[in-house]
Image (tube, helix red, strand yellow):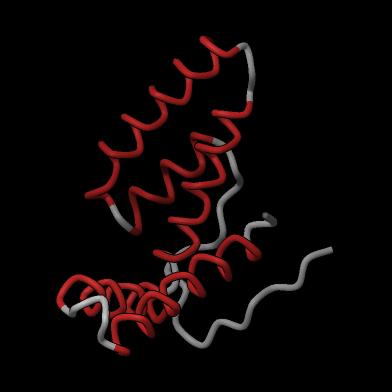
Length: 118
């Protein structure tokens, strides 16, 4: 059993099931601008699964998008990620604030992976 991370912000939607349809519907609510990206990655995962004869590319696709939705469905978490990404994109890599921003990004993604059961 995994423990749920604490959420102090407002969750926009409930955590969706890890199916392509549920994740797409959730993404349409919390980050509709990313739907084309998701669709492209889904097509790539299907092609890789067919080529390799393995379901792993599809599992990876579902996990990745479950994590993205997990982050986007919580306003505080999504805001923290945007802020950290902005800092990481605008500062020099030798700046301690850049390193702190990268650590924050990693922590947000790690927390989301735990929340979705990865």
